[in-house]
Length: 379
Image (cartoon, rainbow, N blue to C red; front, side, top):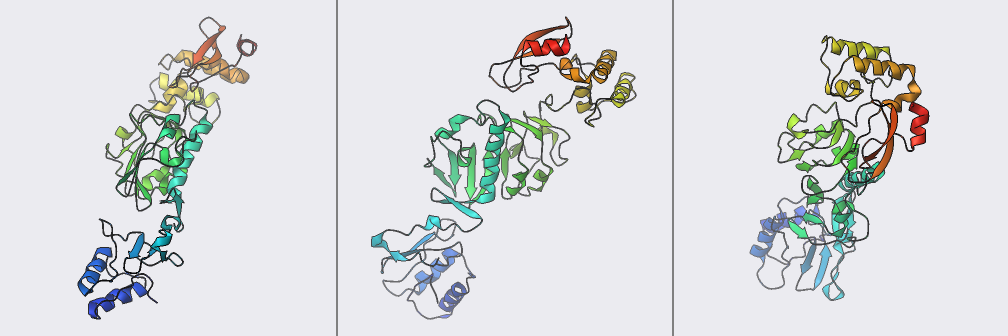
């Protein structure tokens, strides 16, 4: 039974091919080619002519003007059962027929995996505790293009929550996100880890996440994004974040510029084995004697007094950490961080051996919550 194309045309070879291919659900041509066949074979008024997009895809709603009936079709032009109805009763709600793995949002179909990645970025940002992450101003509107059409607004704008489709600047084609820009001058303020599900963005060709507060490690599976040119600065950038080495080998250095690694290191744990012990002292001595050259990680972890040098003073601090493990926080230098909040903390000033107050930006390193706690531990 032919449901999709209801046409009364001349019976010739082209028309038979037209009908048979639709019955089989395996179109031989795109929509425009079927449209041309129908127009050429129609000998009068009342013929059904397929309606196509500018890119020769099938319009999701097809109508037969002589009968007044309209129905929904899938991407191959096949009628979706139960959607046909007379136009005087209104057009069918074709947007509700998003087949798995697509989901319907405000009348559009989006791949669920793509939406999940964006939602996880939002969740990780909220869980990081960084103020205004993600940037709440994005809830006011959206910057999104769907199949070449700019969408002015969604029903969920201004609901006091940043939704996945409000995040940054997005471009979607055929239900898949192909461009996602949340970088410079967009002010997304994303933070936390880059989700492991990033590899689900299989159709993306632009991914710009520079100038955020992403921390932790970059998932290795980011290298599996085959449509993304990681070597193009225009298409891909992770610079100016707080992401920790080692970085995936597929990512070039220019996409990792000016990375703030100070959040990545545990002071004294130079070999990154989760312990501060005699091995770390031996490694530090090797650096001082220039037997070995420290990596970025080893330098930041070994520069315990934060004087931009690794020397005998750091060895002495290491000894104190090992002998007094409970006083580890006494050797931690507070940091303002990149946020603009006001969070007071207390730290032990090793120069005058006194506890002092320090104001961080709420995403730096906060040491002791009270001066009494600092004094009991360190003085």
